Amino acid sequence: ALLRERLSAQRFVSASQLQRAPDRQLARAAGIVTCRQRPGTASGIVFVTLEDETGLANIVVHSRLVERQRRELLGARLLGVLGQVQREGEVVHLVAKRLVDLSSLLGRLPTASRDFH
Image (cartoon, rainbow, N blue to C red):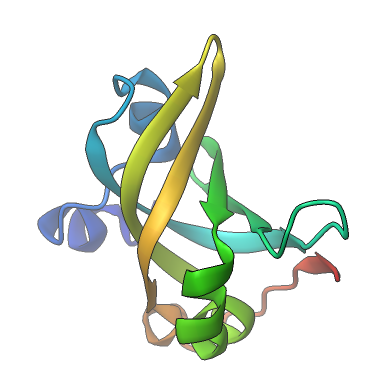
């Protein structure tokens, strides 16, 4: 919540706004990384969960982007995602096209994620 004004100025929407976005809309979301998962059955896709003051956002990172932006994907505590909304009924994902490490905005605030590789 303390960063919302700054994130909004960069056009990052909240998790609750992302949940209401229409299918295929381009969107930006940012949040603290709470979980990274790379299931063996997902063909190199990494699933990331971001949390902000309004809830959770589900992020899908395809293998090509994983390779190109590994440092941001694995190192960011506060991650910005530029992508396209994928809606299947009530389930909403943001399919990442670009990742931005925004961790510097957190200062020394401690965060932790649960990572499953």
